[in-house]
Image (cartoon, rainbow, N blue to C red; front, side, top):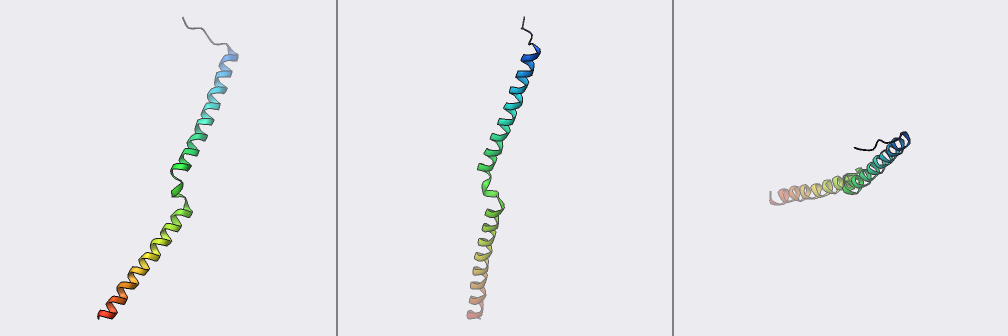
Length: 70
């Protein structure tokens, strides 16, 4: 037969469980930040600006070629 926990043991195990949940959630936040950091707004903006610049260069070259060729 299993031993019954005293009130103090129940409270102590509750605190341990609560602390474990907090530590686990902090680890999850850190893991998410490291895995999905490339999705932060500054990286997205940089990537969009770079894409826009390349697009403008390509469109400019196409327009220039169309004008030159006739």
